[in-house]
Image (cartoon, rainbow, N blue to C red; front, side, top):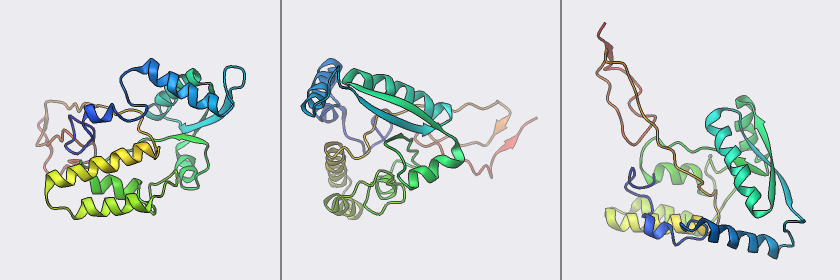
Amino acid sequence: MSPPFGVWGLPSDQMQKLFGYGPDVAANRAEARKLIEGQGYGPNNRIHIKISTRNIPSYRDPAVLLTDQLKEIYIDGELELVDTPVWYPRLAKKDFTIGLNLIGNGLDEPDQTLYENYTCDAEGNYDGYCSPELDKLVDRQSMESDQQKRRQLVWEIEKKMAEDVARPILYHSVSGTCWYPYVKGYTMFVNAIYNGLRMEDVWLDR
């Protein structure tokens, strides 16, 4: 998770040094246009692609924003909305050009997200990114007992994934949890959306 909610994510000052993550949006777009122009594209020769995503608001809305942003660098995206029963089989088959997907973590723990989504044989590695070097770093951080040394390894991993454009992170969402006053015994987690949902200690005072 990104700071300040997570304790493992790359600090903002280091994140801003990565290509494309700097705070100067105009400069980022200008650099992106140079890269596109270097491949023979431009305002009179635009790239046309299909952007696929799951057809529910939490996926569809950011995909619309992505489509709009890509226009700034000569990329015209056609939004393809995919029904939920079809979406995950499409991801598993890697049947997309650009697919906007969400990652939800059960807890703020590097092993949980790195082994699930980014190593070569990860089940959630939908874009097929594979780096034996990164896999070794993931194993090293998992075995490191010193938390500060482990954090440095995790930051090194995050930098490498950004440089390799391994499933770029476009945004982090923040959500709230609400409940009625008569709901008792519920423990709210501030850094996870899945934990605390077994409800064995929850009761209704009404």
